[in-house]
Image (tube, rainbow, N blue to C red):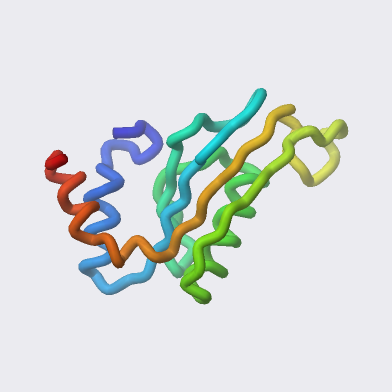
Length: 124
């Protein structure tokens, strides 16, 4: 269980939100290259209110991922986000870590509730 959820099992949280009737989008770091604020596998859950569970890196990356998650929730269409963190000036709005990240935003996770329930129970 990733520490970024601070003791909350992300699979149980997904099931809880689905069962509560609230929409959500799952956000997952798919690939990284160079210096990045998170590693592959980092994940977050974004509720329609904008409430965030977990993290995919903070700062500009996370803000853009949350914005995309809210839009994806309205359209019900997953999307990929690519971040180039090579902004040379810290005064720029962009991240300056020096690496690249690819992030998946998926608002369709409710369709797979049973799979998340099985993961929460530790069933393969």
